[in-house]
Length: 357
Image (cartoon, rainbow, N blue to C red; front, side, top):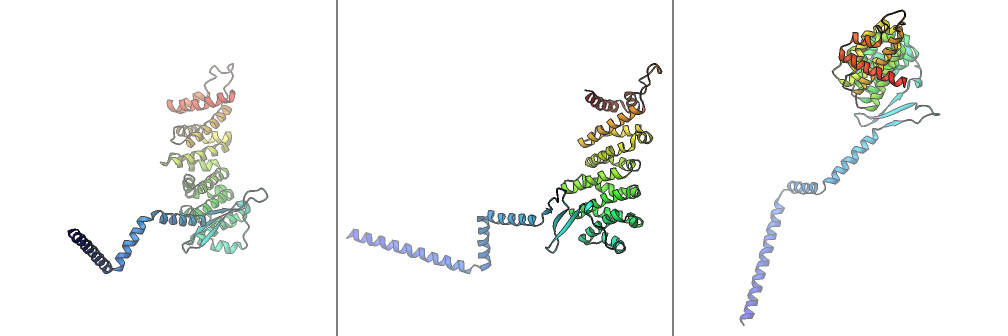
């Protein structure tokens, strides 16, 4: 009898415990229903974000890659084994559309249909706030330079000022078009632009020193054109201040231009310009920070040595008692400090030994 009563008592206790749990669950459910929907949504979304961060990041990466893909540059294929005719750069504009900018090589530019209308609208186009309009105007400057350079002479200074303004623009497509325009101006007008060269020169040196490869390569090509088409007598004084620029990369590009320009003087031109001035410039670049500057200095020193030897051949011993008085070694020691002379002689003697061997 006691066992039966004990079992019944245990059953009663268990039943009461279950009823208590059910009551607590119902209260919790009622409390949950009283919470505002916005709070429940916020809590739910926060849990979702914590649970799946990688999915959201993956979607963002896919969108970023797609944007880059849509804005990538397109290069036309070679025609008949020649270089590509144009390079189209897809640039996303502010309204979400994609504009194409053609990088047309100089030899593939067509002549203008109406020169007078082009000249009338040229300066306004170059100064436009619409960069697509500016690119079109820059290409018209190139066409005028190649086919009708006399027509632009009267406004050339203003044109160069506006081209330099485009060179400063952070938009790469506009900047490269301005660089290509500078190249065509150099080849067309030569020394006529020497008084306006500074505004172009500093920007081209900067662009040739930056990390964007396609802009850098275009700027270096333009600097080569500058040293090719502008006479060294006019160009060297313009370059010389940049050999001491605080930016080492600009010094390096200026050194390379200086080294390319000097040989175009010829032996007599180097003598006229002053071989002592040139050797001092080259010696100062031998200790520069960047290897490009030092290599340009070595190239220039070898050129100066060859010219000096041609101009100052030692006289035969039978005629002169001091045949070494006009030697390259004595010249360097007389024009440079002992340390600079030693560095210059080390470079030129090593190169001469290499040629002899």
